[in-house]
Length: 544
Image (cartoon, rainbow, N blue to C red):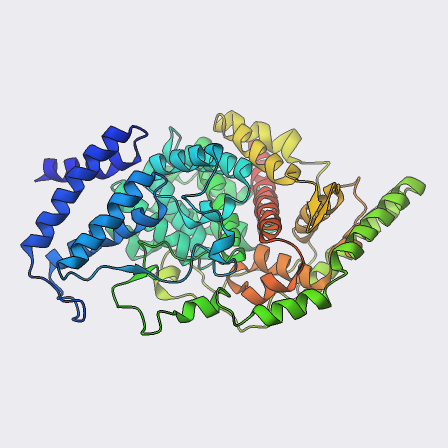
C-alpha cells in the first residue's frame, strides 16, 4: 500500500517536469487514478451536499488539487488537461470545486496581475523553477511577479532556507515558519507551512500547540516574540539561554538558521497583509463546492474592487489627487538642491533623527480594536498579548542603534556566511535587489531618479526600530512621506494584521499597483534587515 502511495505522489510530482512527455505520462496516470475513484463512489448530484465518507473526502481533495493546477500550473498542457478532466468529472454528475474570490490579491484587480498563461520566457523559467521545487505557484509569487528580478532572488533564497542542506532538519524549518507567521496571525502562511510540515513527515501532535513541540522549539518562542514585536529588547542573555540549555541546547549554526527563518517569515507576513494576499485555491477559504449564485456575480468581486461599484469613486479620487506625483517630484528636486547648497552639522543630523524617531511613535497604526488571534493560530505561540510597543512607554528609553557600530555590510553579512554558508550572500543580494530596484518611473513620469525616495522609505523603517545612519538627513523623511503613507508603513511593518484595503488605497493614489508592490518589497526587506541586525548583534556580543 505504501509503495502505491509513493508511486502516486511521484506521478503528481511528475507534472513539474520540464520534459513534456514526462508530464503527459504523469497526467495520464493521474487521469486514470481519478476516474477510478469517481467510479468507486455513487454519483453526487450537483445540488446535493457531499456525504462525509472518507472516499468522497479523498476525491474532493484531489479535485481541489486539479482546480489549483488548472489555474496555477506554469505548463499550458497540464492546465488544459486538468481543466478538461474536471469537466469530464462534472459531466458524470460529480460536484467540482470553483475558486473563491478574484485572483491572488484582495487589493489588486486580477486583470492587473501577471497571468500564468501570459508571461515572457524569463518569467516563465522562474515560474517553472518555483513549481518544480514546491509543486505550487503561490499567490505571493504571482503578486511579486510584477518584479521578476526580485522574485527570482526571493525564491532562490527561500528555496535554500527551506529545502537545501542546512543545520536544521526539514520539519523543524517548517515548524519555525509556522511559529513566525503565527505571531502576526498570518493564517495564509501558517496554512501553507502546516501542509509542508506534514509532507516532510512532521509530527501532527506538534500542531496541537507549541507546548506539544520539543522543548528545543519551545525555547525559541521567547526570541520569536521579541524579534517580531520589540527586537531592540533582544540581548546576549537570550542567546546564551538557547546555546547553554543542556540537552535542549542549540548550536550557533542552528540558531543562525532559525533566526533567518523567523525574520524572513515575520517580514513575509507583512508583505502578505500589505498586498492583501488571498488564500491559495487548494487551501481553506480558497475554493468552494457550492454552485455559483444565480447572477454569476460573486460578492467577493465587489469586496476586491473588481466590479464596477468603485469605478466612479476612483475617477473622483484621481481628480482630487491630480497633483500628488508632481508635488512629490518637486520636493525631491528641492531637497537635492538643498543637499548641494548646504550640509547640516553632525549635531543637527542627530537631532533630526531623534525628532523623527519620536514622531514615528505618534503615528497610530490603526483605529481598529485589537485583533484577537483565533485558537487555530494562537496555539502556535505563547503570550498572545505580547505585541508591538513604541520605544518609549512609561518613560522607558531605548538607546539608538548606530549603524556605524554594527551594520549588515560590515558585521552581519560575514557572521551569517560563516555559520550558514552562502546564505549571507543570498540575503545580501535580496536586500540589494529590493533597495536598488528601479524602472526610473513615477506613475506616468519617466526618466525619474527615485533613489532619494527609496532611501527615505528604507531609513524611515529602520528609524522606527531605532537604527540610525550618521550620514543621512532624517529631515528628508517628513518632506517625502506624507501622513497616510507613514500610517501604512507603520501598520504593515509593526502590526501587519491590521492592514486594510483602505490604507493600501489611501497612499500614492496615482501610482501603479506595481509601484505599490515595490514599496511593499522595500518595507519587507527593510524590516527583515532591522530584525536581523538586532539578532546578529546579540549573537556577536555573546560570542565576544
